[in-house]
Length: 318
Image (cartoon, rainbow, N blue to C red; front, side, top):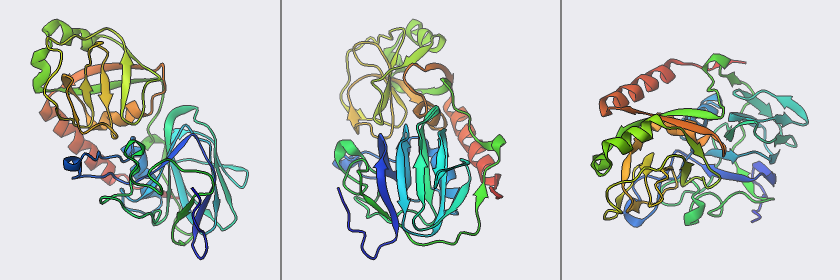
């Protein structure tokens, strides 16, 4: 889809990459009409990209899955790229991730392909000026809602944004940056449907190693490993929370993420802690996962401590 760039400042999409989506913090309060949340799969990297540009944490930015994005700046502003390890070049010169960079009209911004992790985030000072649908700019391709056209970016799309000062570039110190790899340890809050699973099935789940499969996307990650069989085949459809561990008839768990359906009828063992779904979303097929059970009180404490810690971490001047 091509957008008119006349009298508009922003970025022209030269190459959209494998799957680049416009995202903000997410679309909330719309489950009643069947719309899911959307939003960034790695909320930590997303919020840091915005903070490094001097934005509020939920401002509209780009989620770049696997890489391959090329943009041409048609405005003077600042950008930041965080998340998965991938080459970032501005006018052919390699640049550092996890910091903001000044760009000028005519500059070419290229993101290569990820070598560790798989989701990168590109923010711009002030955010991209994208109209909201049902209260959010977040793109959910399955529902064809949000973004510029309800789907991923296409060649010659235009991303409007305002001009911003080149001054005030920031960086996040290396010891505060998350590390991405090929394995993750995820913490789980067991739910009321745990009663549908025997003690043996629950013990098998928490003592086994699972592998991510190529049947994973923004709706959820399908895992492969020891079968977990509930005592019931299904339940009446009910609302599904972010991180829910759904167990279908084949016994292979599915961890549901931002673009999940709003209701479902498979038994759920529990939910992955929201802090840990970002780790999951950075895993590529063939990565390994282990699980640990935590209480709801543990989960609240971990969330609170992480929010307080992140609040006191200040980006440094470049």
